[in-house]
Image (cartoon, rainbow, N blue to C red; front, side, top):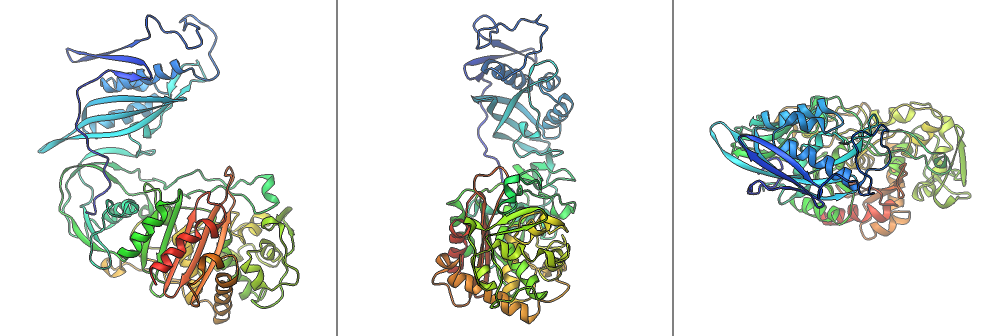
Length: 590
């Protein structure tokens, strides 16, 4: 119904004792006071048999025992359940932040009658369920139920086990600076429609939860709806869309092969790009406005089915001639990697690099081009997958087999900002100016030097993209003209779409299409693209990431007036992981 995703509602139950892996905290209610008593069968004794003598001078170090984890968790949960905010906060390693969050939970969130039920301990972590009642003047009370978890840490100063404080302890959807607030919704609900007029819901299309949140955030008021009363997560003003920490470090091992980089989601200071607020519980219904999108119901259904079969998968389909987004799906419904992810795109970035090299006269489709086993630049030694080489081959052959050294060898002939300019001026990426209709990350190709600049040419170094960006790249390569992707027609709110400052030359477009068509017909993408020709083109890719056993697998392709790109994180080679997802969508749209 265009509503933000909700946590499940369950009937609240009577207060029950807290039970943590056999440790019982009896909750006694009387005269408005709540007391908690940890029962250990006569005394607090650690599992290793040593007693917890209060007079010990030495600061305890080392791993936490099971009893320490249980005790710390029970102390915190019992105090929180009993309304003793100060005591609960003191049981954490950040009492100030914890007190503010727990106070906001009851005062701003208006959540009362809280019952906390711990689950099983897993190492230093304890999962627990939360039940309560949400009240707001003039509306009926509603029960609230969800699951959360905490982790116990040892205080470095005194060795005391404490709950490691994070906002997600209070609710798993809370990030730094976020708040739980009950009141009139900031924006009215939206009834989002597909291109054929059918309603889009998160129940029917699980991947669209974050998209529907974003549509409501931007168009709730403009669509003509009326806000209801809700419990929601209100995001911090400087909220960042992030699944992993930002880092550009590379290991020594990465200097022999492609350069390793950590996948990340970059900071985006534009308020329109932030993660939208999220509805957790609706106390009174608002009146939704109606908003039409460009999504195709059949392609969206296929995209949902495809990503659900693979962990860490994301995919986007766009129409090259217009920029309309026809499908978007993620196997993780809680973060829109397809639109907001910030990942090294690996060899799919060679589409942009090839356009640059052809434009600069450094490569030509059918002319000889070096593809040695190794190439050194900036003190780093690069190699091809399985250390292959091509003797006497053309640039087309190097592109089709995704030869890294064919691109690294040209680094010395380029300026440090050459790839950045090509990406921004011809492909319309990296300027943070897209207006899709929901929050997006619009790609980044920072100016770099030495080895990192060379690594950027093969989609590593500091280059960051997502499936929406790479679907746009292959669409631009197909048509020769950048069309900013969009989910809501600009006529709805009279907004301007981003444009490229210059058009790809006919020479570059002709050769780029030839490279992509050859790769789809006889190169690394041939197996998965079989039967989709002749009006088709594709590029495979994989991106090394520090700390991952397998690289992220990428694949981007077009068929007719459809362009698609997908990534499977830790999926390995793109043709084997992301390729089948993209190909299935191109077939479905035929």
